[in-house]
Length: 133
Image (tube, rainbow, N blue to C red):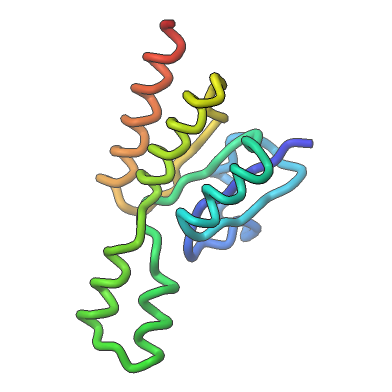
């Protein structure tokens, strides 16, 4: 069974629009929306066949804060405190190093071009180093 782990706080992976980002044709799609969900899923289930990364996470936290009367400025601060897709990629690298395994196939669907480049560079550099051993 091919499993796709979709990391994104707002984009529903089952919507047709996002299928172009699938690096595989998955049998199962697991949607995780935060660093915590990402790390817990992999820790409990092991690596998926493929991962799709978003960079900016935390929009649901900001929306919930606003619904409870928090100012826009404070809600933005809460969102910025949430760990990012790059943090997830860093954690993934450590996990793979600890278990002596390759990172899964991946793509990045982030709308944040700098964040997308940061994740791509991090994973590309890891692959270069790990595959040259």
